[in-house]
Length: 326
Length: 183
Image 1: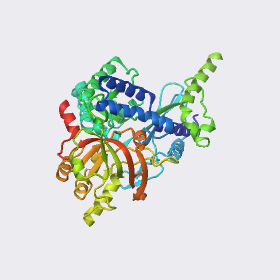
Image 2: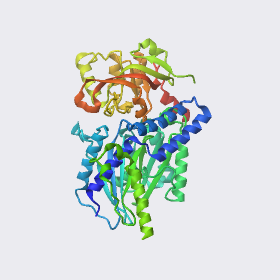
Image 3: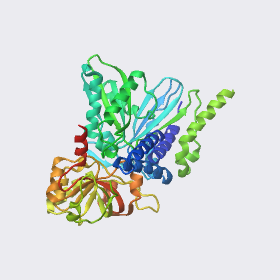
Image 4: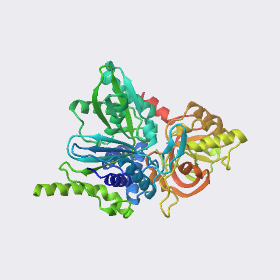
């Protein structure tokens, strides 16, 4: 049984960490591109823009200032292995954690009460947008994504005819980049979902953003597709901040799934240059529940919170060592 | 490329006429934050009174909703939001006295036309670097609409705030020229 309070604590810690500290994989990719641009022409616009992005990450982490003023809506995915369960009130505890994290972290409240009929700020940044996923294995894992409006607005779902094939999917991504990349704060991480159903495919594209930049694709075919689309996106010359040059995207991440014989659903979810997410293990594959010391939750000292994720990884290593010894 | 052009605000339209699409510019002086909800209110005021509220004539609008400041700082994180969402109001605001806007992303043909017609400029700021841009803000004061939270009208005093000329007074559009070059 996964304790809802621990889920809430992990959401809190994940938000505080992600808002001010750029994902290490995204920073490494931008930094590498900046060094390339600097060697080519240190006075170029792309070099200046990429340098600003690297500096921004350093300032955010050092001063605990949000790396983007749009601290987003909170998207939460709780992955539960076969042996895990959670009580039904978990997401009300998540909303509580969101409110605490946004108040304590001085993050921006960016949620309105109703999209159509009541566009008044909730002033809590709740509700979070949550899902539970059943996954193989014994572990439990939490993903938190702070999604900016600009990059989500630049995303889309298209239902293609199956004969459109790989070419058609690539065209959807490129059209989306040409029309919307300038609004989505490039260099982008582009999440692409293909398959499943109309409603599920967008979720696949969003999940694809969680994958580490530079990590291997699901298959050789997926890797070839990702490289081909990435090359085409970067050939547009839209560039960092859409001010020209390269790169326009750091990575294309593809997720595919089965689908109806008549369908080829495609979703593109844009991730921006300040893409913020955190993944926190709650229960290890070996079935060890990981604890957060109270000092790292909203009951404790705020200044220590942002290191909780590193400590989550240390706790996993410690649990693994314990298992090896026993 | 030479170093950035320094521009003190409030600027005159003569100052703006010297800028060309693609120029790197450092702004110093007051800018006013306004985004979706503020534009709806501002446009309603202009339509009713025929002029801008709060002495905004001659000023620069910055499409931004900052995070709350940490103790001892003038502002939290601040950066540009997508400009095209303000396109519904921008031509009329430029015609009633706003001289420049700061945001990110492409503008409509109507905004480009209004820049040309009124001698106004659209600056692009880099999105996703709000901790860095906040260091260029030396002071922030609430002007109005504090019920809108982050969307309130604020007067920011900026120093060497980095932007690029996106649309110049001749209607040249940097994004479109970049896009055309790649097509």
